Length: 257
Image 1 (spheres, helix red, strand yellow):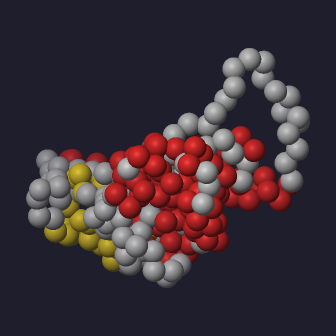
Image 2 (tube, one colour):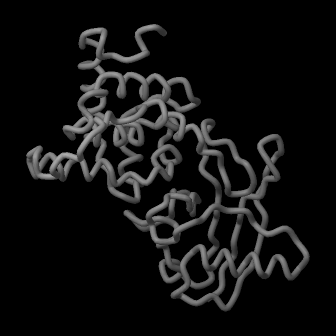
């Protein structure tokens, strides 16, 4: 197979980027998209040019590092699939493929296809820790949890923090990411001590970053590689209202701000 690649090249946050044109041939249909990018970079290096910078790590759809907008879709055209799980057989021979970084004010481009997603880290860190009492570990079965509740919590916890929800959102909102992180702990008994302070702190930090406002377009849900539902956004909104009405001593340090 052969392809024409239009790839965004940008030296850094303070530079103006543009698309660069590449041709690649002899591509196996069984190659993953990132393997194809590896082959392209070898080809570019052999021509004494600077390879394309892109993020990757586990290449198993777990880490969330492979952040590319492919033909206008975060992670590419296959639903429920990360870029590293996308294969070249999903494209037509001779096709032109456009590859861009995540587009969001909160995710500035560091170089080429690599963006700074530390805003996500700050939102997560704002949630703080889960209280764990010292002493002997409790029996794992000592706290009964309804199977439906645990399944829902696991659905929320499946978020890999890739940022596709932000890249897909017309407003660049981070509501689905924040909602998933808030919800999976608020559902479980272990997350109850900091339940109110957690949602207040995380939502306020999300608003302090450069994310846009949620417009209920549901593009985040459609492009999430883990299929996380926008129902969690409604759950987070309810948690936020609940926290505002909670006693002040349970709201955490947000009271002083």
